[in-house]
Length: 366
Image 1 (tube, one colour):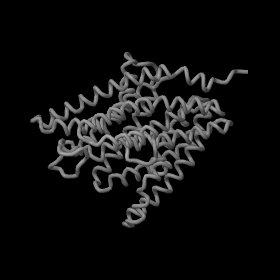
Image 2: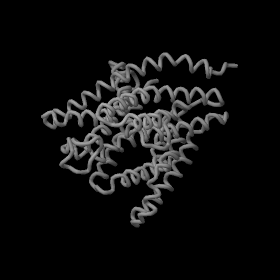
Image 3: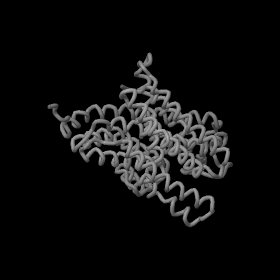
């Protein structure tokens, strides 16, 4: 059953990330700036850093959705179907958006050769950047999470998502605990080492968020009342512990702003509670197609807002617009681009859907 409430949570998370990036756009360069006087939207200061919490909400949703979709899959065919379904979900929109970003940056004056190299790394979800868009790093992390689940499915004995969540969450807690100790002790060398992207790629920095999502699925998945109560009692302590270390990661990301860290934790908790509330849905809303459209737009907005928005602001900053008018124009361009990408990638996914059944047919029943 489609969970329509998740579509709204996804959209709000994407808009948070959009506002986080827009807050730092420069009027004079194709890159963010820390100089307040050079910023196009200095009035969005309250979203800088805080809006990045939308990514951490995405990771929780991903843990929940992937655990749900991996249920009852096993063996080679199960892993193939899972992997191809995930690839069809993220790659077409990524490639289309990447090409749009290349064109936008080239029109704004960037050299074409380096842009193609950045696009190639993005298209392949390479763990080594730089990427054509600033958000691709999170998709690399997502892809590693998918790979972990696919390997578990491939084992053939049925996937135990609860054990996967415990192992992943515990390893992430150890990493975050060491990182927090280094930050509190002001051990710059160790901090710089732990900041390296490899720790993101191997799910150590953000693993607690995926684990929280998996545990939420483990606690709410359909089963008998007695079994459900037992699973909740077992999973709840881990859920609380992993959430606390999620707060640690949020603090590490925003520790220069104590109030921002507190607001980020509140936003993250609100996102998790919104996810839980959406699970209480018993019937489709009045306009289910609208909810699914907004859910689809959340991903394409996430992919297109950073580079497309930044180029739009850079090109129009000298046009004499007020800050609010420039903001609304840039958002309108991002929404139009995102709608176009969604319409194209939807057709691509529908056309490629039968290929999944050919390459990895469903196992025949006995």
